[in-house]
Amino acid sequence: MKTTHNGKRYDSAKCETLAERDHYSHSNNYAGTTSIERASDGTLLVLTQTNGQDLYMQDAFYVPDEDINFDGYDLTDEQEARCAELGLITIV
Image 1 (cartoon, helix red, strand yellow):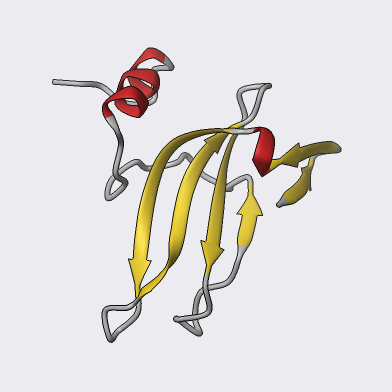
Image 2 (cartoon, one colour):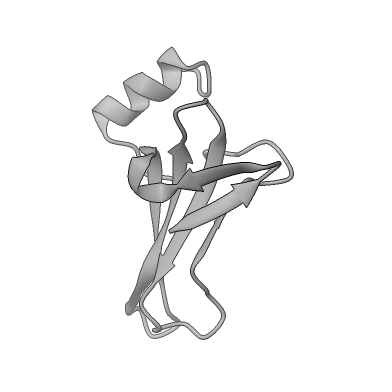
């Protein structure tokens, strides 16, 4: 997916995935995934990819208006280490 923000063109296929969160419909069917992506210039973006199981969710790729909160996202050990390295989270 691609998006433009402040004259810069971002391609989700070229971004680094820092965290992911799965979504489920009211009947507990998998409905899609939202991920936090990092572009090569350091910009953080949110990518949501859906499968049509939830009518309230749509595919989206955007730069959020506010700071990204990592609460509720799943991180692999590698993603956790990378986010800590970037100063996005603190490991205690």
